[in-house]
Amino acid sequence: MERELRSCARQPFTYYLRALGMAALLFQCLLFGMQHGFGPTLGGALFASLHFTLFAAIWILVPFLTADCISRERREGTLGLLFLTRLNATNIVTAKSLAHGLRALTLWLAVVPVLTIPFLLGGVSWLEAFLSVSINFCSICWALSAGLVASVWSKSWLRSVLVALLLSGCFSRIFGMVVDETMLRGTGLMNNGPFGAGSFFFSGGGRYLRFLSYSIGQVLWTATLLASFSLLVLFVVIALAGYKTRRVWQESPPSKLQAWWEKTFFTPRFWLSFFRRWMLWQIERNPVGWLERRRWSGRLVTWAWFAVVISIYSAALGDRHIFRGLDNLQNAIAWLLAGSIAVSAAGSFRRERETGVLELLLVSPLNEVQIMSGRLRGLWGQFLPAFGTLLALWIYFSSLPGEPGTDGIVFHLSTFLALPVIGLFFSLRCGTFLVAFLLTLISGLLLPIVLAACLNHDPNRFGFELSLSVPAACFQIVIAYCFAMALYHRLKKRTFRFAQMSGI
Image (cartoon, rainbow, N blue to C red; front, side, top):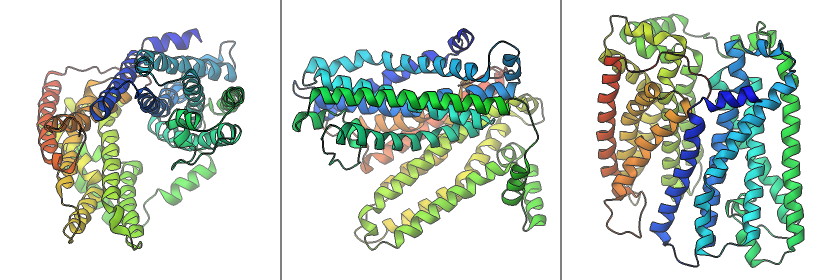
């Protein structure tokens, strides 16, 4: 436990995490104030909004914290050294879960000063505050469990993170069902919200408790039961993770099932001569970009997103009421694609820094501009089939009579061009992936939208609208150009660390 706490204390992200949580809630306060103001009767609504922001941050950030705690030890070969001590596998997993749980609690405690603002405004009872604390504590337990499962069952960093996020989504759904059964039905409250149990803890539970009859003692008792059940789930996951760690700490060749799975589904079988010529042409034309697509996982991202776009549009075209929500659907796909681009760009130079490939690139005949352009062409080519198909269909449907214009397409097109540039800079600048990913989203998406929204002269209509997409795209291109210049100078002057990065 002490070793893990010292290791976490040496990581800069431990301190950035508190600032990120505080900044997220302060920004949410700003948005709430610009939309609704800070009247004396709006404390409950502000508390619900801040509770939702903290709740979402826990389910996103906490799995990131624990997703690489065991898999990193396996990659670096230090897990076997831990077994030379008096610790067993369960002790190791318990120490890591407690250490990272303490990091998650620092995120929770750092935002307490912001959460006092609704109490100063009034309209928040102590029971609503207790329910918020209970829900967030249980969320930390479930999110820690998702990260531990992903870290034990996978050795690759990227795979661990993706599995952790996937499990986080599944666990959040299960947690919502548990809340629905224990809190809502157990207390006699009826959940008639549009999102099932999610509408309960997204609103902090206050809306139901203010308007429906309830028993305070029963609510407190069911909240305690929910916290006890969440702790039990965490303890069971720790025990299972310890059992799995005892089995996988020694390196072993792939099993017959793993070998068959990779050979059957991930080995090229058709048009092999064309595939070899295509890959040879790519490595001769763009060797830096070829690094992004040399593995089946990189190529899978390209065609998986292309298949997702085609499948969603095919399913939507079968609905007779397609045009009612088509614009929202297209925006949702575009935002998800932007997030995937940010993930790939923010983790791009990380792999080269860890494996030592970046040093080889810098001493090769390639200059800095060729390295930058090669990697950018690789990232653009990775998402071009999906993004090109989405924008082409979007333009076609927007040209139909009575449909929205193409203003939103301009911003998403500039996102496709600018976000890889910004992500590459932060992948070289930041020591941890999560910091690079968040800064990429803030600088490439949030900052242009905020700057464009500042052009809106109506303070009561703060937000991203289609009419603001063109100035937001202009701001985005300018920001990307500045980061491109900064990236070039960093590569030119070699002003970055070559040491391996450890953990998130």
